[in-house]
Length: 185
Image (cartoon, rainbow, N blue to C red):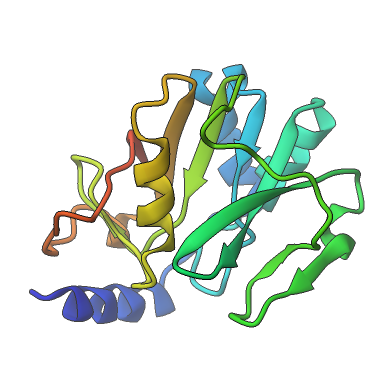
């Protein structure tokens, strides 16, 4: 199966999938030590067909942690900008690619010098038990994951539904794995 075929198969399965509520997602992830130990939470604002992690971000902010969302930059680079406060959703802007992200001027996370325990919640279309990830095809997360590989302070976690797990897709040299995949059933 090619990456394009795998993406199409998963997108088809996701159209009829039942997604957990943001509260259920939060309960599962908040039970993980890797979440509870992290000072920085790098997440994503969910697109259609992605698991909603906004409840998790609310919880992290309520607990006084720093929450960061991605902004796609030129040449497949991403930077993570900080969101804060109970009204953080209202401060997001729609980017050219359709994603919601923090405005320029927000604090930017330094992935080369994280300084504190950090959890990166990585989106994707499909995952394998070894942490291999099939994204949407832009390569932004692969570039970012490569930049942070080997950083002891940073852990990566992917959340998926059963229909997204243990999917057959080819892996290429530039594809990066996540540390852990949590299947939400």
